[in-house]
Every structure is written in structure tokens, then in C-alpha cells.
Image (cartoon, rainbow, N blue to C red):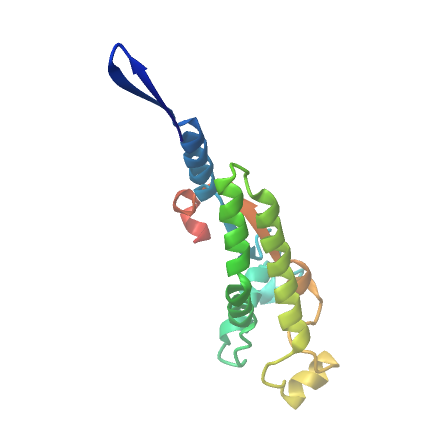
Length: 173
């Protein structure tokens, strides 16, 4: 904000230019109208037959995350989210500094997207889960957890949306 103080007809006149503050406010409002979603956003399905026909990758990911009647949970998403949260603050700092400079910060959001996908793939690669049963290993032909076809790992995404999280499709929450 710029102030101009002047004397006119023995009166003190103060003029100010608040255009910079208005620009910062506009930038901050636009910055709140973005959100990031991670997971299986493309609604792709496994090509299965019989009762498993039409299963989305996201559904199978949910079963592996929380477990089922016959399978132990493998919390790949919980571990990934913990790792992302731990490393997020520098990105938020960078994002808000960009907004205060009236920049849109989309480059920072792209960094967050890339970091999120990398952290998920690293979590799966580390294999820090309960071991598979001997029967499962025999059926699969290997003991690698969460990687059978590779579709779940390959289809994991992180995207920035230009909408406020409160205005997004309720089915996506």
C-alpha cells in the first residue's frame, strides 16, 4: 500500500493506492480454489472374468489397504500419506510465498503431485508389510506384495484441480 500525504488549502490530504493489496487478495483467493487429489482417479478397471469382472483398481487398492476376510491389511496408502505429510511443509511455504508474490503457484503444486506419486511407488517398493502366506506365494509365483499385474502402482496418480475442495463432486470425497 502506498500513501501520499499532501497539503491542499491548509488541509492534510492522504491518498493511498491499495492495488497491490487487492492483487495479493485476488491471488490468495485463487490459491484457495485449488486442491490436490491422489489415488486411482482414472476409474480404470482390472480385466477380470467371473465375479471379479469390472472391479476398479481403486476397489482392489481399498481391499489391500484395509484387508478383507481372507487377506491381511497392507496399509500402502496410510504409509504413503504419513510420508507425504511429513515432507509437505516446505511445499506449502513455497506455495503461499508464490501467492503473496501474485504468482499462481502451479509449479509448486506440480512438485507436490510428483512427490506424492514417487512416495507411493517407494512405499510399495520397500515392501514393509506382513509377509504373504506360503499358499499365496505359490499361487502368485513370487513373494512380492502389491505387485502382481503392476496396474495398481502404474495407475496411481496425483492431480491438481482448479476448484475449491468444498465445491468438488461429493462422490469423490
